Image 1 (spheres, rainbow, N blue to C red):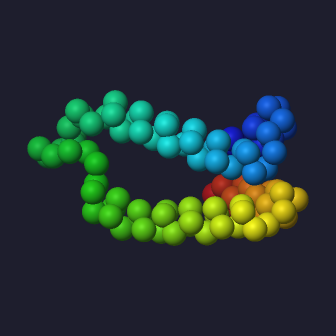
Image 2: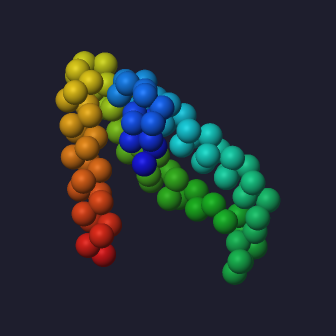
Length: 98
């Protein structure tokens, strides 16, 4: 939802909105991490962060980010916007289907 807000209401271009959305997600995630770092797991004496899951997911996130940055540099803004809209439509359909 960040992309449409940045593009429609704040008049960002597609190439400006993508890095801004990434930054907003990073800052929100980092803030949540810092606020939850002192929490304890509800059932055992451990940190609630599942580091094995982080190790499993992080390479795919980095790879996807690298591909996204490459596409953002080589594709025109119209094609990027079409791809983003298509992705949003698919995700909306999958969410509503549940």
